[in-house]
Amino acid sequence: MRDEAPLYYNERYDFYALSRFADVERALVDWRTYISGKGSVLEMIKAEVPISPGLILFEDPPVHDVHRGLLSRVFTPRKMNAIEPQVRAFCARSLDPLVGAGGFDFIADLGAQMPMRTIGMLLGIPEEDQEAIRDRIDEGLRLYEGAPRSDPAQAVPGFSDFEGYIDWRAKHPSNDLMTELLNAEFEDENGVTRKLTREEVLTYVGLLAAAGNETTTRLIGWTGKLLGEHPDQRRLLVEHPELIPGAIEEILRYEAPSPVQARYVVTDVEHYGQTVPAGSVMVLLNGSANRDERRFEDADRFDVTRKIDRHLSFGYGIHHCLGAALARLEGRVALDEVLKRFPDWEVDWEHAVQARTSTVRGWEKLPVFTT
Image (cartoon, rainbow, N blue to C red; front, side, top):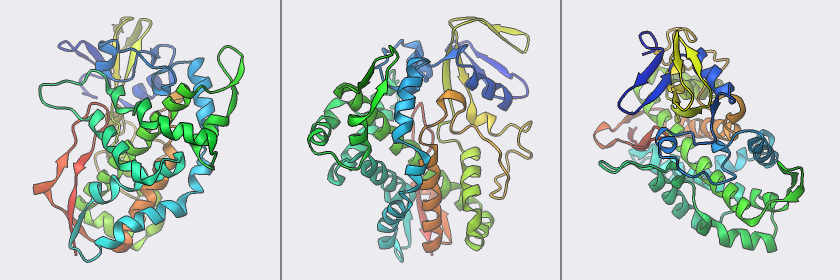
């Protein structure tokens, strides 16, 4: 597609797509032409699903900037990196009982556990409730044969999931993101200085819970799959753990957990001599862009020593993933802790199951044999 149809049009579903790195990168930055306010998922835009206010993934400036600015105050890279000891403790808690067991599941035993514990701790969600919320998110994303999903926003937990926590935190403040959101003062899009409403706090908490669980689980699954298939690369990381941060970037580039973004086109725009009319849907294939030979030499080769100045797995521009620092931290720590205990593994392909969703790509089950 990158070579033969850099601007692709799908007649059956009536959408355009860009797949080259330079084109996808430019479109992600050009929020005036390609807007997110009607959704960032193809079927969501087509179905004209109503967008709840506060879901920054589906907003445009100026309201997006206000909401993102507020969240970025409580979700800083410095705060995320400060929790590394707790993330390592969550990994150890998951992995230590599996040593000597002959195998484990990268998803069930680690990918579905550690991110859930981490975002739960950050938000202040009691540990005994975290698993039920994660399962609700997974179910909201899952696709079933013959039953197309028209509203991927269902994956964001609803008010009922968090109302009790919010009310409790309002009366019993603590050192967590929920308390910070309840107390934060900001200037809204109308120039009014105020605090968030209860409903707005609920929306933000639900968004963070969903985003904090899902894509990192996919990243950890791809880590197990790719390093299971490339034992030479895995051995290199065992011998040189200082390469692990770069290896996480290569895993993100090679298998983007969120490989497709959609945008609504508000003005006519030209690509490769063709006009994309206003009112169209443009699908941005960032997973393809990450494999573009024009950007990355020998792009289909998985190489943990590759020097990557930038990939598009976290998006780019105003919608660059707010949780990128947390995802990188969790991916790095998870890989480090796995390699310390399990320097060798093979994927149990007979029992591996790939997840089916319209927004993220990864594994539902990824069992491995260990020695």
